[in-house]
Length: 377
Image 1 (cartoon, rainbow, N blue to C red):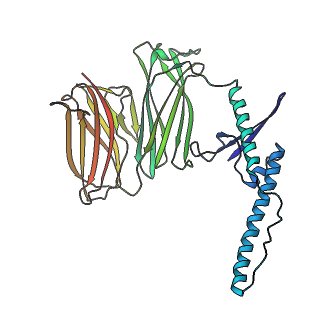
Image 2: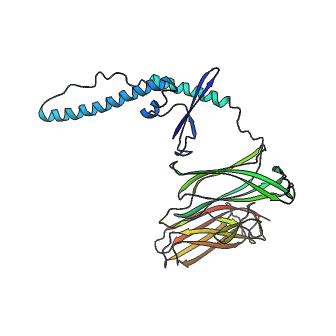
Image 3: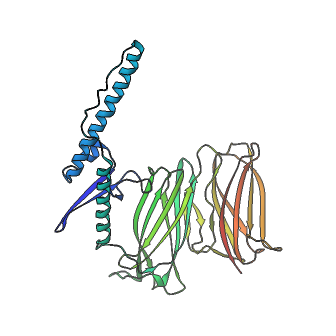
């Protein structure tokens, strides 16, 4: 995928080239480049914009002819050697071939034009302050069976600007969310732009939060995810991301991400009719319980699987710093949704590492997921 934009300016023409890229995907020309790839048809198509591209296209055509004749000559020499004959080279007068200095000159000119465009853009997006959200990203579901990306967020109320509308009681908070998820090949790209209006009874004050959930389809496999939060008409924004998100591998034992929630936290994920509590602020008190959700797939019905759940500090000292639960179940279906409740009353305040492992009792195959858990006194 590629495009070229030409601007006719008083100082002369400005030519900018855009191509697809591994990071942003191959389905659209997303990336500004100094020079187009050296493919004859592509370069030739820009000859009307810049005569240097027409000249380079002619060189590429000569190079292609040179390679073709060289191949034919090699074949003739092989045949002649078998018969005791030799053939003179037929490729000595082919005309122009690509000169490295021509390519270097065009690339340097392209870099200069890129610098001009990037330093004179009058529509650059600038954000003067941060929305400071708490963001949790989860890959859930089962491989090959509509896995999803969950974006759970909480934004401080005093960071947002309310708007009013005639006939609407209370206030509205518009929030734009841009999401990009790129797979390892750059071919499978998820893009989403949405603006939501949150209706509340009164203006949010300091100490209050705007909670939200966005659910998007996520292709099976590894993805790097980036999310940008902005408010229309505001100079505040914030970004969050997570690399190597994956919903598992189809055909083998796999776990989704561990979704941690809390009853009464004010946000619920409606998972195919099963309400799963979430915890936008991602903090738990010792008096509360953690509601844990995950998907397990790739099981063999009738086979036993052992699940182990561990909560521990990175530097556990004394008692009350660790919780470990282990149990075995016999699988009745290849995949299932799992809900567990973890009591936190025996823990001290601090940050803990939660690790969940599922092991096939017959083969010993083991999969694991982990996340951090924040506990306050």
